Image 1 (cartoon, rainbow, N blue to C red):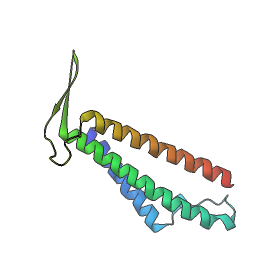
Image 2 (cartoon, rainbow, N blue to C red):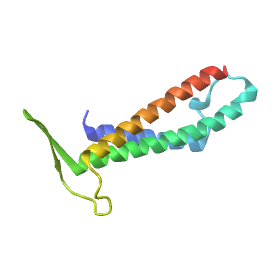
Image 3 (cartoon, one colour):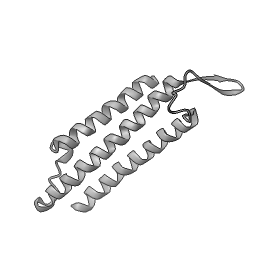
Image 4 (cartoon, helix red, strand yellow):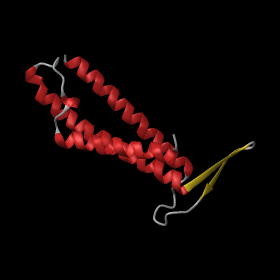
Length: 125
């Protein structure tokens, strides 16, 4: 799978999470094992969490897309050769490494939040 496909998939995930957060209903909110009195509280918290995850996925996707278009990477016997294709005048500090760190950080935070949601739902039973 190409990098462009993965970046597009990340953006699709972000859009879906925003949609689910705005809609506030659907299969991602269907937890019959949670007591009826706690379902509304859980639904409100999940809406906020899904919106946050959507924002993180959007940032991650944009950072990856920017990195893939702003830099070219060539792999040689000597190692990795990174070439900058263009610069953004108002963001001169952007580097290949910085965008990699942003993307990795977003991924770790995103996965951590989703694991936290699973643990939270399991405790609400």
